Amino acid sequence: MGIIFVKLTIKNITDTTKQVEREFLVDSGAHYTVLPLEIVKKLDIKPTYVQQFSLADGRMIKRSLGSAFIQFEDKELAVPVILGRKDDTALLGITTLESFGLMLDPFKRRIYQSKLMMG
Image 1 (tube, rainbow, N blue to C red):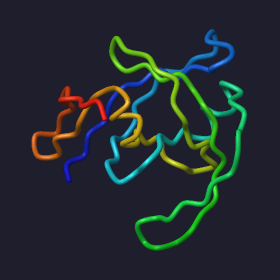
Image 2: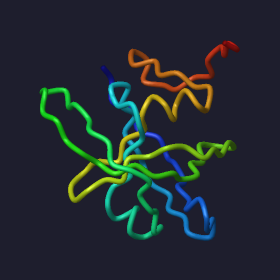
Image 3: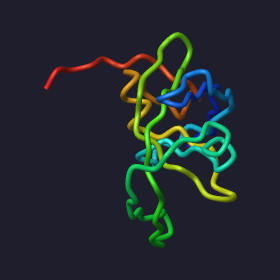
Image 4: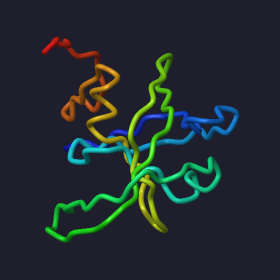
């Protein structure tokens, strides 16, 4: 798969004056978007609950989930996010991508508008 980075603006859902702009790796294997620890701290994003996740190598990890506003180009949505720990990478997960009505073309290394279906 090709490596694709996109620029996102992340905002605290309860205080949108707290925001960070950063490059995120698009990861079609990641369900949720991962916010690195420094973004979580800077925006003061609070955890909602803890979830267990399986990594590609089979290891199991636990991470807290919360919510954030994510802005991509001219669109902004509230989405669930993984609150990263030290050394966790900034990842744009497939759930967030699909919430924006977007798809990944790994061969051409681009994001494009997908055809959305109701139901």
